[in-house]
Amino acid sequence: MQEQRILLVEDDKEISALIQLYLDSHGYRVQTSRDGRDGLHQFVQMSPDLVLLDIGLPGMNGLELCESIRRVSNVPIIFISCNTENEDIIRGLGLGADDYMTKPFDPKVLIARVEANLRRAPVFHRSPPPPKLSDYRKLTFGGLEIDISNYTVRLRGVLVNVSTKEMQILLFMAQHPDQIFTAEELYRQVWGTESYSDTRTVVVHISSLRKKIEVHPSEPLLIQNVRGYGYKFNSHA
Image (cartoon, rainbow, N blue to C red; front, side):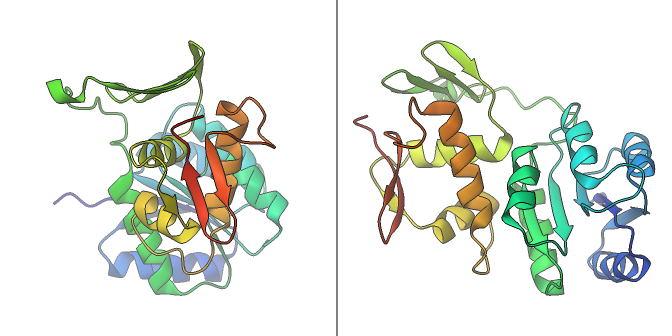
């Protein structure tokens, strides 16, 4: 099997070497960069299968780099940062990052997150296989329409721009209407691994999704909170 390529953009030399060691030991081909602008150049040159990205980078910070990558690619992006502030996490995920880890981290968790995001990732710069006849169907809930054949979302006929992970969350919940899922269960279903008690990624993606598909995001009708349990997709909205 061809080696999967990972671009690691981290300005701390020791942390970068440590992460590279973990990834090398699991058979990944790793390209490193310690500068945001160089990281963008490396991205264009190598077309990686996944990007590990720090926020505090010289030249171009991680948030700017993430935004630049998202203009041209849906490759999985995982932020790795010592900053645990919710604002940075929200900004990073809002710009299209798929996951977020804070330093220090357990190497086993890092590898699990990388493997899960690679498993769930759409193939980079490659057309999807033709859908089967059974896939040509739509899920409709009031004014919301989810087209499974081409993975698009429309609200009252208007195309809604959702990220890959937002689409995966929405599709999973819509295919299991009126069932309650905890944030941990949603993480496991969409990211393919355990959340290790950090469910902010799910919370932020659901918040972003509500702003795009709910008429009143502060009073959601489609993706509802069930106090003390989790979330459910309301098929009767």
